[in-house]
Image (cartoon, rainbow, N blue to C red; front, side, top):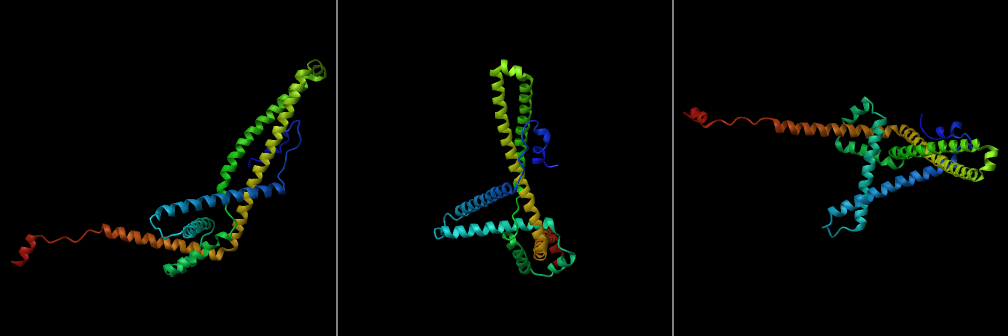
Length: 268
């Protein structure tokens, strides 16, 4: 069970208050805009970090311009997004044995073309927002604790007010007014908390919907993406084989050098 408006909508959470605020289309749209803005902000921050790193590496190159640095940083950021995209695709689909056998017959340049073609689709695929879920769920848990406290406080204040009765409210008018004010304030804060919980639940729904749309899109583009994943696997295999060959060559013992005594014996 996922926490969210499932808890807020429970009638027991509102013994004397209005029904909970439910997630509607406008809240989903607002949540989507907020998540999109957050994702774009993360991309912009990473691009700025790449730009600063390149500027530091090329600080002695007086001929390079800011525009060239921007272009290089943007290209590197796109390559990194393509790498992450292919890693995500590889976790969702696996190329068949026939495609892998075909890929092993293609040279490295051809495999690079396969890989680049698949990675270039990163901007066409619905964005991945899964990495934002943890922060939303943390905020939601904190808000649920606050909401539960407000519900308990509201129930306690309502109970105290009921126990005063009509006679008590007449003779202890000041206390009755005080309880009524506290109860009204608690109800306002509880309703505000319910709206925040609905907004957080809308964010989680947007993340889930986007993930479903992403999976459906990947399934439709399966052919070209499978080629990219196959190319990635075969290139990784070849790189591993090359590294293993280098280690084997370095570990192979050199032939023994004949001693001077053996040379003398052979010549005599």
